[in-house]
Length: 498
Picture 1 (cartoon, rainbow, N blue to C red):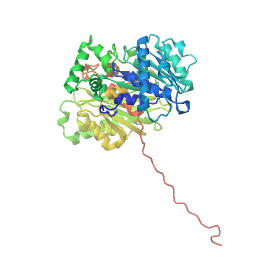
Picture 2: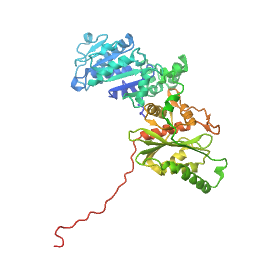
Picture 3: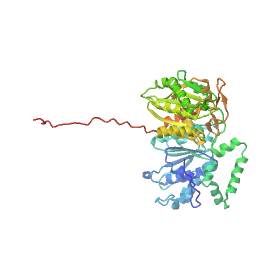
Picture 4: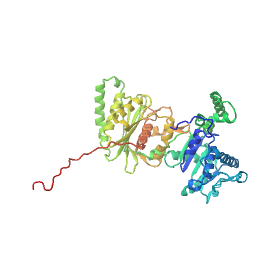
């Protein structure tokens, strides 16, 4: 999680602006709230880049806005920073501007280094033959973003850099797709997210008060923010404009066709629901009954697992009402993850859940990692597993931030066929279909459903355990090293005995 940089009235840039400039990735993308000043910060970086000699990393910069007024505003900002650098960038010895009156033009600024910052129209042809940094501002609102981006990315062959900055403009927009693909690991953009709350936490409204010569108070800031949100036409508009949540993003996240494409009839699902009153049976009796069940039901399946493959486990916890779910994944030679077994437990006492999961662990060949839902009562089982297997077990506190970061790679694995052999089962299909996009983030809503046989309630339980198993398989784990010692080496002189 990024560290918040408190507002400093003597600093020109706010924390999120500094992080954007400090990120030297070849491709970077910012989803942002309106009027956070990120383009202004980009202008500062671009003025510095254009002012440097080539040997120091200097280059041309090409700015592509969605309209003429934006281009003029950006060039004005670059000119302002260029004048300020005599003080703000004192370590640069070169004079930024030779003749301020003549060299600062409306749409291009030439620097003493020989480089320039130039505003272009959104016609992709304008980038042909160019070399340098490309800034595409309000990218989500470009009518031909795909063509502009294609032309811009061609420049990266020779080391150029591309920056995309924008507020969202719908969930199906290419800008949003690039962000999702980047989070899924399909694309290599460095993604920055700057909501209104993020910006205010690092001093946006304090800077507004400083510039407008108003006194800042927390109460005034809260009122200002509330007015911004209330003035939008709808709640969805407010979330898109100020909280980086693209509109039209609610609804089912995984299609039935996508899920069924990765299902297999041969993968077993073992379900065990304890009878009412089972928790009142003396624990030693419960233990023996479940041990017999593990040995007769689970062990024959676990013995079929390939001993050459790494194995992972994901868990979603429930004590009563919903189902506890364990998912066992195996990593193939080609790095595809295949589901080998799913175990679902209903109305099962805590101690017996611990007993069953430890039994599974001890029979997994090359056990390489697990992820447990550690929220609420699930913390008990997660801690018990961690006590037994240490750092191989990750106790996960599921949150909006966690879902945002780890659902995209999960969906990408399904789409790319890198997660397969999910049991062909009506309840598991329903669990995976229950994912919904809420405020731009895929998650399981609070609504419960009935199992296919009508006997149990479900809350997307196996969908979460599948997600956690896939998450566990993506983490770098340090497997224990087994040392094999040889017999002591014996030697004797060749002349011994003579």
